[in-house]
Image 1: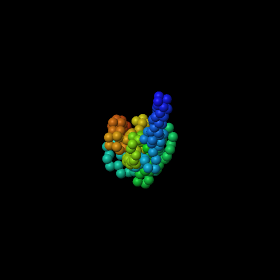
Image 2: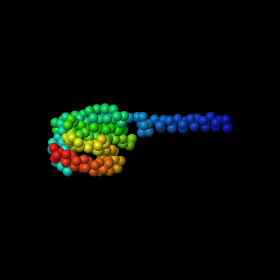
Image 3: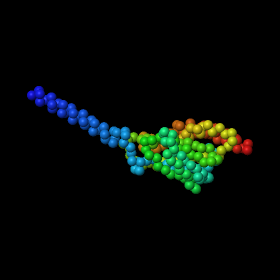
Image 4: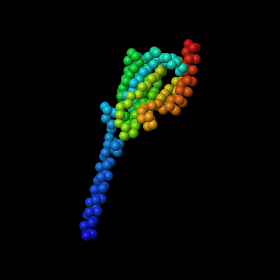
Length: 191
């Protein structure tokens, strides 16, 4: 009787072990599986305006022909998009990646926006996010060191289950930008 139990015990143990391996291959638990970028993405709808300063709410002039360069986490340029005559550009970013958007046009100071499209594996959706950026003309001797860092960081907010700006980061950067804009207007007045 004992000799019969041994093979039965090893058969059950093998069966349970094989179940564990099968479970690890399910899509929710395998980090090597990638979401279909045609179905699941973050669409960026951008509007690039000509800046009138930090306190001007009505910036009607747009920047047509500005380029938005999409840089991946390995620092490779993966795409470039140009704004149309209304200052608009739309494009889709695959989920579960980090990107840097560099917005630039000759004669203007460039700006950077950081986008993290990572989100929980159980959320599969397509998202749309509006980005409104104001560029301003280059001015000689203006210290633009603050613009070497992103002016905004976009990420998935688990509470709202939507993409949003990092409010604390944006608030800090806006304080630094106001100082730069003050210097900008002082330099423009001198010319």
